[in-house]
Length: 186
Image (cartoon, rainbow, N blue to C red):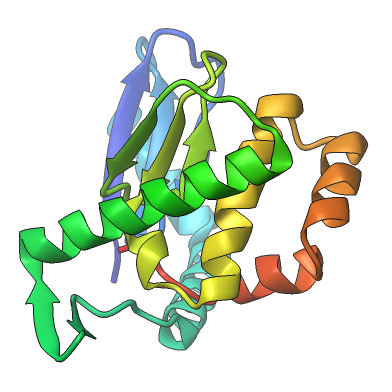
């Protein structure tokens, strides 16, 4: 079976059904909806095949996901926990600074976090945020993520010119994006 999460919203005008990564069915419903239980049960019954199909898709994808290690061997020593995060932070900051300097990009701060759904982001204030787990990825994917976020300093969107400039400084962008989808941020 599956979990159902009901969210009531003052802004919702219609009922919105979403399937979340954690095998939860989320229904966003208008706050003042009458006969909520009856309507929710009806929707779940009517959409049962749709829900089942999409949950199976998620399960199939999850089985193919590659999970990153929670410990590493570095110079003959095993590092894990906070030491692993410190090692990752140093690696990310050094590589980001080196690439930014080489490509003439200016940024304000670098934040290292344990994000659940993102590898990285770039704010409008030119702050870069990275998931510490990017340091555990293969080197070409690690570098790709840094270059991707640095390119957002020039192009804060994912439009044609963003991809053209990123392809200019990074080889095989499509292939790297495809490979990156095989890994889990969790």
